[in-house]
Amino acid sequence: MSRILIFTGKGGVGKTTVAAAHARKSEQEGKKTLLISTDMAHNLSDLFERSFGKEATAISEYLDVLEVDPSYVMENDFKNIMRAFQNIINSTNMGVSDQDDITMLPGMEELFSLLKILDIYESDIYERIVVDCAPTGETLSLLKFPELMSWYMEKFFPVGKLAMRVLSPISKTLFKVELPDKQAMSDVEKMYMKLIKLQALMKDREVTSVRLVTIPEKMVVEETKRNYMYMNLYNYNVDAIFINRILPADIDNPFFNEWLDIQKGYIEELLNVFQDTPIYSIRWYDTDLCGMEAIDRICKDILNESNLFDMKKKQQGETYEMTEDGYLLSLFLPFLKKDELELHQSGTDVIIKIGNFKRNIPIPNTLRNYSIASAKIEEQVLRIHFVKAD
Image 1 (tube, one colour):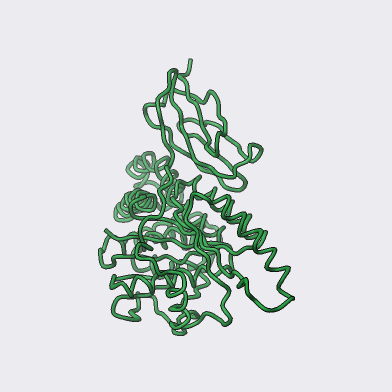
Image 2 (cartoon, helix red, strand yellow; image 1 turned 90 degrees about the horizontal axis):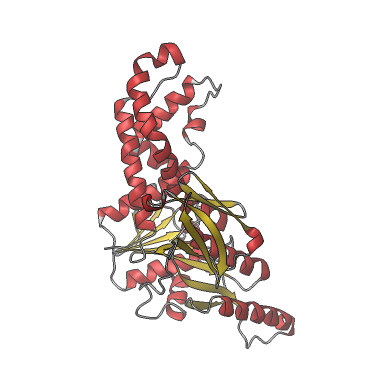
């Protein structure tokens, strides 16, 4: 069973370097490793000072590197379903002349990047897969998309299949819309099954964890705390924090005295708020970190423990438990403020919105006749109480 480590953080904090150092350390341990970038502004080529193609490139016996190109993945792995989407859009006379502009529907880049990771995992070629993600906001969009897409497909396609059978013979003449053919529909069904498997893989606390990279500055620390909360909202397991670019305490220059005090304050804040999460400190190096020698410096200085790739922490995900008069849904949502939370029940879903991020949690069949009676935040846990509806 492969181990998957996902690295993310605010842009410019050094997450690519930290991810690459993990991959290099894994290689040094003799584990077949893939370092994969899902960031469209790929930085691995700059870091390793060499170019990479659209397929995995071997840079040593145990280490391969891949910079994912979602368009290439779609064109090679999902031709039929993309052709179906193309035909539907063309039939609506949207006036779009360039086909390449309309095949990349909103969110498809994120979806196909993750589906590529699923295919690689199932190939069983690599013992460890290290993922260098885009900055925080894009990563959250990436990680929430499989669940969101599954939700929409689950709502639509039971009706959609019936529509295909009934409307397909007359769709062109009556509705002027070309429906997907049977081959495309088969691929849609396959994609839905892949999304279910992808969700299970990304949230498997025995396999996958997220590691956050930050630096001791106010804006970055605040974003790291929000990022941690959102990861828990979508039920992802964060098992380590890396604080990068820490100035050396013995620096002999009065100019840096104030900076040292500022960094010290934010480092103490990170240690306090993440006291139950393993934290690693990386000093600010005196040169650009490019090339294998620079990556090896981090491996030697920081990543020198034998159990680096073990799951450092398993935060309990969302849980249901029976109460005297109903059921209780509990979600660990650290740093959540009451006035930031919007919560309601719609049909068979519990809808939780925090800031710009929203999650629809399907209610188990057992609770289909139950409704939300109350909700409160206790010790960083959101507790939603369900009672049987009248």
